[in-house]
Length: 185
Image (cartoon, rainbow, N blue to C red):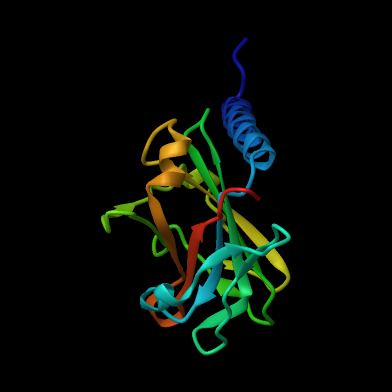
């Protein structure tokens, strides 16, 4: 007795969903158990990033220089790495009153090395890419990207000057610049 076609398709879709969730759980679990290695803030432009510095206070708290003319403190991000999966997870928070556009087709993530080389960070999987099209006010979205140094997470941190995230379309572009979190935090 053969199984009707739609049962076979449903079983395949369920299998794909379970495998995707298993991968996602592995990357998320490990990423949330690692310390944050980059912190970022919304910027008018990546060119303004020279004015954005992350440092530790005397108490060991993370701080950054603030300039309301070039920064939007209501859009910020943390990045974690997962050496086991060579996965870089960037969580973008939207504390503004408007939605931030996001699309796998137009969003770009670039790593700038300490030698001023630009490396395009590849999206981990389009199946894991946020599909809503927006980061709504008061929400956050997690992006999974490949670590360009493979499983070498120490090299990722030591060789990275900044990560530039550009979300949305050209007419609605949001730029976030992440800098390494200083050691000791």
